[in-house]
Image 1 (cartoon, rainbow over the protein chains, first blue to last red):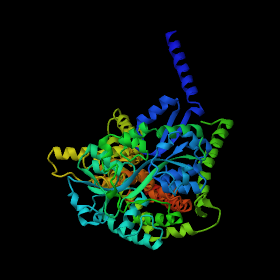
Image 2: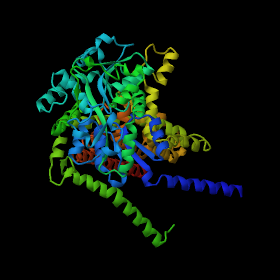
Image 3: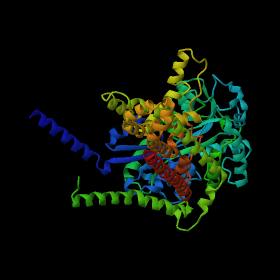
Image 4: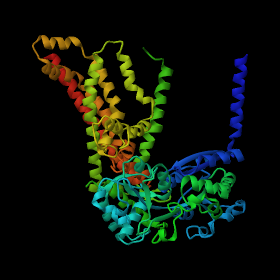
Length: 348
Length: 288
């Protein structure tokens, strides 16, 4: 009899759980890997009773392909493309407009980071985090003065010791900047020159990684190379010898943005979630934990002094000399793709 | 045993439906896509073209293809070198321990091979377990660089695919009759001749089957090259995956995939021919 009662209770619990996760109480989030603290998701779930189903990607390209492919029944409610993918997806009608009247925390955003050319008036996107792609060096094994610019990565002493992000646009940013071109160049001849230049770098490259670019440094596999500033910040906490450097030719700047795909299943919950993330207190938590800069001006004022004054996360103006924001390169993307493939397929 | 007609019809229909839905139709889609043109919005544009195949002729892809094949062949040979003596040894053991050992060979299948590949990473890393052990024992002074090398990719492939070599070999060794070996030795053949003229021909079907079962997946396992090779050793499987996921050039990805399928079909045909030859030769030997 006792057994029967237990069974009944389990069954009832299961029933409640199913009821609680009915369609309107679920939110499907598609974000970069290691880009949101678990605690933030838990707090949102506790406050709203909405269950968050969280999936991750490691490149804009993969995210885009997935969103293109899924139908209305399997889509995501919130995705986090970088600026240049926001403009592309907006142009192609993949995004649902954002109703800013439902985002009472939108006002906290830094006015310098809203209403940008990639999405005028933020009709389709809300800034989430911004950061830079620069150089990391393990000062235990490399003298830090050996590296001050991207061009230094070509030095023979780095043979088989470099880490590059597995991101076509970022790697080409390095090749283009070293040659003095813009990291957003669309000229096929310039891209070919960058490819030739990067080919010379390949013997130095040990690994491409965009899942967790700090890991090869922490594992001791690589001593220098590319990294995202937030990853460098997290790596420093584990190994203080890993230092982030703003190269002279300029870092690549990017901003990732919350968007609602056109195929979203629950637009209301998506707005609730975005507004939740815009709360200064939540913005502070994310920035401190993930190590990227918050576009939320109010959140920045709340930051721990140690983080706010950390140049890896919040660069000073001198660090951003020559820095470039990544923009949409339009059809030239196929030229990038061609040379990216050739670069990786190269056998010499 | 004779199956009852309705049951048999149902089973056959189910298998046909399965093959049609999950093998034939997807392959048909791939074939059709490979002859179309890339489209940024809808992935493919219904416009006939051989452009994707023309691109495959680029020597860079020939290099990638040969490299992948070379890597797969090396993997197969290593598996054979380990698997052959292993299968022989297990088949000669007392009957009560055999099932346990074969069970241990199959056991890793209970864990997803991607997870096991990540586990390999922990073993091979510069700060990993192997290096720590070697350093601790004083065998090496500086950690060995094993991860993100071609050797690491081959080690990963061998680890994942070894059971596919062992199982068919074990099956043929199980059927190898002990008395044939005794006859050979009674007739004055020393061990090497017995192996060369009796054991090897009789186990050849297992060798061929094992090689095929290892070689074919080895060409396509892109994630092993990604995780253990550092995404730097582009293999044909990576090219196909990148076209579909990152570059979104479906026609080109489809064409590359068809090239791979054709190469595999060629291998299967070679297998069929050699298996027939082996059979015929043993039949001849039996007559002689």
